[in-house]
Amino acid sequence: MQTETLLFKRQSGGPLHVLNCFPNTYAVGMASLGFQSIFKLYASNPNTHTFRYFTDWSENHPKDIDLLTFSISWELDFINLLDIFKQLNIPFKAADRGPEHPLILGGGPVLTANPEPWAEFFDLIAIGDCEENTGQIIETALDVKEQGVRNRKKGLAEFLSVPGIYLPSLKNKVERQKSKSSDLQMSSVIAPDSAWQDTALLEVARSCPEMCRFCMASYLSLPFRAAPLEQNLIPKADQLLEYSNNIGLLGASVTQHPEFMALLKYLVKHPKKPKVQVASMRAATVTKEMCELLVESGTKNLTIAIETGSQRLRDIINKKLPEEFIFSACKYAFEGGIKQVKLYGMVGLPHETEEDIDATIDLLTRLKQATPQLKIVWGCSIFTPKAQTPFQDYGVDKTAESKLKRLIKALKPQGIDVRDESFKWAQVQALISRGDRSINDVLIKVAQSKNTGFGIYKKLLDPDHYKHWVFDTWDAMTEYPWTALVSKKQKEMLEEHKQIATNLSL
Image (cartoon, helix red, strand yellow):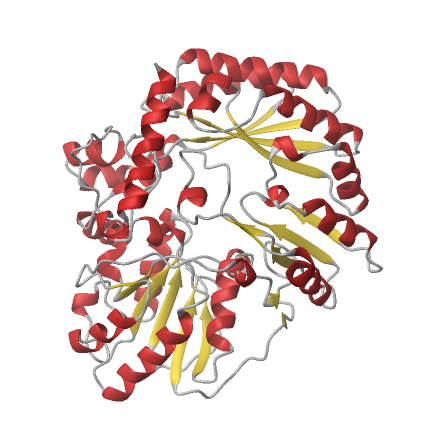
């Protein structure tokens, strides 16, 4: 492993021993700005002695760990979570742990949306953003340690005073934590061996103003926050460029930052001439000038989410994207020197028909004909319901796999590269996304089985239960496992968006 560069002063020798775990490889974990931010918040606190743990590498750490933290970004990482428990000799369930075991805290978007399928694995779950309550978590954990009641009911109750902390054993009502725009993150570590090799990451915006009705990134992190340019982004960029000449601009909708072009121009004109990479951008914001600047800074590819070629379905899902912007984005990309455009899409969306699939084939075919020299990649996933979104009630479309095959058959002869998702694993994601605590035992049995393939999930679940969690469309009488996390205002907003989508589909 190449040498990392830390952009903060790492503390050591503090009385609280912390192990920041990421249930995947070092390359994936250190490419996560969320995990980097957690590591900095803990490792820079003088009350801690903090270490990291990944599935393929860990720092040498003491045996007497007081607090384990996990950042969960993907449903299927539960296997790695339970493997880490086994490696550290920690019982899977919190109820089976004694005072000799550390407190275990989970966080991240998957747990914020629906902690219940994971609830029995954790003593504590952080709901929402971490910037403001991590210091109080550390103080409380230290108090619990000093009282000698670690991991007992009395000790856990101390965390009820910490905003945003959910105690699965108590099922307490929790308000999701929201950071300020000034708290948006940048790299705390430059990691040559991460998936973003030797790249400094800068969070430009958080959440997304588009509010596509399937999207957890929009509804789970509202409101949309854009970091101030002069007071925040430029000073951070200058600091990052002292350590790396590669900079990645991150956010669910980076180019919708009101001053994105000013930031891009600043970076392109910077004396260090950094290479700039940009996360997925909105088609309507793409201009020829933007593409020319990106190419000048070393970018060769653009990524744009259009979801579907059907205008009818884009309206239903709240994708505010007229067709002409898709064509103009690709035109400007080619004219600006971009070599490849990757378009993200889905099949199996609620209210989708075969005519919508035809519309996607037609749009992509015309798009390729309009820009034949531009490489077009169609990255197509399968809709999976996500908790706390307007489409949380809709199950996986049983015909999605056949729709995907039809797209592939039609598009590949047109010279369009199709990268598809597994229909089977989309079902498992839906199971974990919408499940309740009964799923905890299923996940444990999967982890204990020598066969962790798709078939084990259906084998372990009653067919009616599997159908309920994965395929069924739920009605207004359904009680969600995550009800305790949803405010009245949020509930009304989700119901309103669902009704609008239904009306548009009629």
